[in-house]
Length: 159
Ligand SMILES: Cc1cc2nc3c(=O)[nH]c(=O)nc-3n(C[C@H](O)[C@H](O)[C@H](O)COP(=O)(O)O)c2cc1C
Image 1 (spheres, helix red, strand yellow):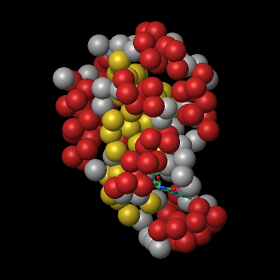
Image 2 (tube, helix red, strand yellow):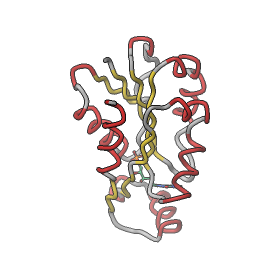
Image 3 (cartoon, rainbow, N blue to C red):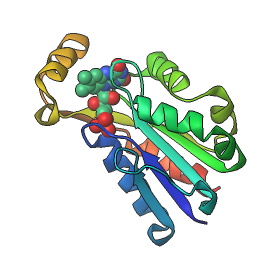
Image 4 (tube, helix red, strand yellow):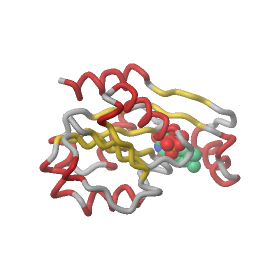
């Protein structure tokens, strides 16, 4: 099964998780696409399409939202899986997931992963540091990647 992992990442956490997912699938049959660098992807060449993004101030990047909107017809014809990287927990996290991905896609997705996240202060600019300090009360690096959620996601992909 050819798999595409399509993601956007601001400070590298979503990228790290995308690489980890790739390492747990068949790496020679799995290709990773960073939407920041890639203009178009031949989606019809893949049997499974995994989409991942992170939340910054309540939403996923516009480029990822546009990619989904522009390719919704072909995405709906494929086996797809979705994951989200963020630091909020529980209901807020669920709500962010639901706002990030359209309902029609969530309904057909074979795996919906909420993978936790990280605050990487060394990669943030001044404004981002101020925002994170204000909204989360944090001012140093924190890693809360949910490795169990990643394992679960992989299991559902394989089933
Ligand atoms: C400026 C800023 C705003 C953020 N806003 C939110 C938010 O609204 N909700 C949330 O759950 N996480 C928020 N986060 C946490 C990110 O989702 C987290 O840092 C994630 O690991 C980033 O992944 P990336 O490096 O792949 O972009 C924010 C992080 C930053 C730096």
